[in-house]
Amino acid sequence: MGWAIALHGGAGEIPMNLPSERRKPREDGLRRALEVGISALKSHASALDAVELVVRELENNPNFNAGKGSVLTSNGNVEMEACIMDGNTKNCGAVSGLSTVVNAVSLARLVMEKTPHIYLGFAGAEAFAREQGVEIVDPSHFITVENIERLNQAKDANRVQIDYTPPFQATNEKDTVVPEGDQIGTVGCVAVDSHGNLATATSTGGLVNKMVGRIGDTPIIGAGTYANSFCAISATGKGEAIIRGTIARDVAALMEYKNLSLKDAASQVVKCAPEGTTGLVAVSAVGEITMPFNTKGMFRACASEDGNTEVAIWPSL
Image 1 (cartoon, rainbow, N blue to C red):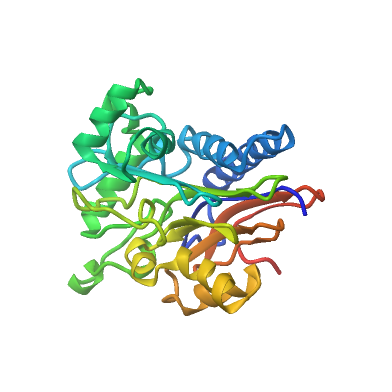
Image 2 (tube, one colour):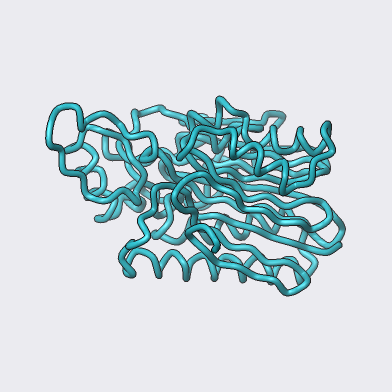
């Protein structure tokens, strides 16, 4: 038994020939975020503190679809969402529709700790952020040149898509149908500390060219984010499929009621999800780690107290 941590930077149809200028910054970002989490857990920070710190690091990295790197809605703005959950108490907080908050995950934690509620969205969440004095910026802070290009590409193809999607060449009207595997993206972290406490946090900008007001799986407890005394899960993938499948809660339920191992429970849930829609990272109370996905790839990393570490994108051989 010991601390363990796992994190992801999004899953999807990530091509094996992904250009190094797009791959390497994300791999480096995963490594930096992993070191943040390792350092926190080695310093005896709680699992809850560790996952918040890691997700903040990912939110501040423009190479991921969260925080600074959030993709744009159909009207050219960001609508960020995040969630955080403590496994022992099942206390949780979630936010959606943010356009000025630098670190959505930290506002989600404040919702958990400072309000009688679990979920705040849009104008109410923004007002709460100002009330709490969290760092806010002009919405233009989040609108990067790369994400403007991604939005224009998606509009040209008449579809919503993940930011990893390669340029699309339509050959006929049927090609404007939204491919299932292109509707994916998110960042998240799960951890168990040396006392066996579990926590999870997830944050996202959503989908490129998504409808204004669309909410995905990230802030939905039991869908994209869940933790209890058995395990902690953060999912990534097509939000609508993850919500329908209650992906994160199903992993925990299989452990709790069927006595499955973490690996078997997560594998079964991901296998049963529609192909090309789902990935997750998970840890158990005894320090087990698993990171299954049914997409082509998933940006992911993990480490444990016994010294094992991994940073990967595509399936391990």
